[in-house]
Image (tube, rainbow, N blue to C red; front, side, top):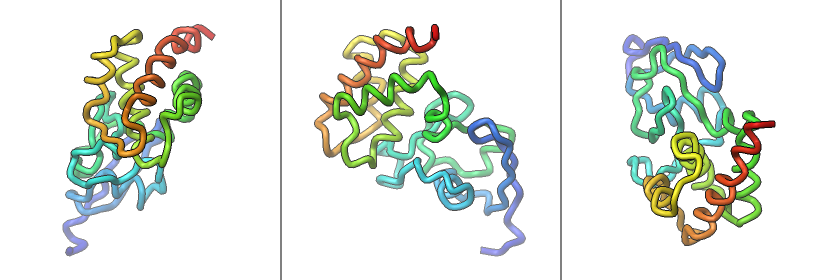
Length: 164
């Protein structure tokens, strides 16, 4: 790839301004992991099917393996590392640990991002809403029951965490 085709792309990641020089079609996933050393976001399938690479782009959940870096100009990205710094996510993290919703760790970052996105939209989701909210994320370890239970428990605790 010719360096002449590369461009400096400026965007915000986890509240910090970033400027990355890369080919415009470089995947957001690769920029996060290789350029910014934010390795919490995982690559599962590389085709947008598994949700392991889920991040928030301007507040909306996306699969970072499908987003070319050129689309990020002026945008804001929140990764699992950004959520981990937010004290409001502590209840969600604790629920995943308590219920065994996190096992091998490949899908966990994407699951937590998806669960956080769901709970921001629906603070007290029904079981069907939890299933739908996490439907873009695949897990081969838990059978989903533990993950869904994690979200249910976190939903009961998040209002308390926000009030503190």
